[in-house]
Picture 1 (cartoon, rainbow, N blue to C red):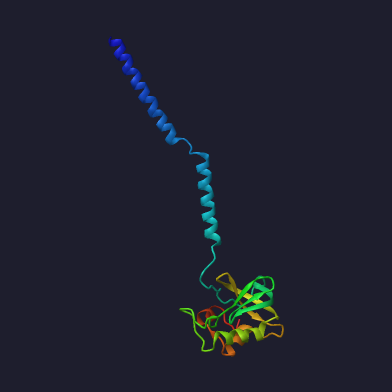
Picture 2 (cartoon, rainbow, N blue to C red):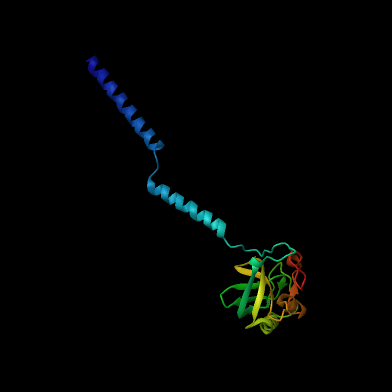
Length: 185
């Protein structure tokens, strides 16, 4: 009788020990491969998004004495979007550096300088200066998926400066301090 009771008690302890061992093995063993793969993919996508997420704020590089040839590019103007933005034939969108124009709806964005001239007048002026022209541009940064640049036409006229001098746009001092326009490099 005692022997049976001892055997039952021993079996119960062995079963508990095995169950506890299985729980330990399950918690310390590797996770499901699908879970690991999914976690790695999510981490990879998050890193890529962090690296390549477009900047929503205009940026400009500080003034340098010598321009970097790698920052220069040619732009055959295919369209003028508004008073401070144009599109090159290769699809590049260029925003004129240190220049502010009214929007197409004649408004001015909060925090942006606001010229007295209309958006339509600025667009017409930029079209007269640059439409169909081949420009040489110096990239200064990016703004809303556009390259910010200082551009000159083939006769050497700086488009950014000409727009300000026409009165249809205004100088944006914050960016002009970082990289001056109107012939000052």
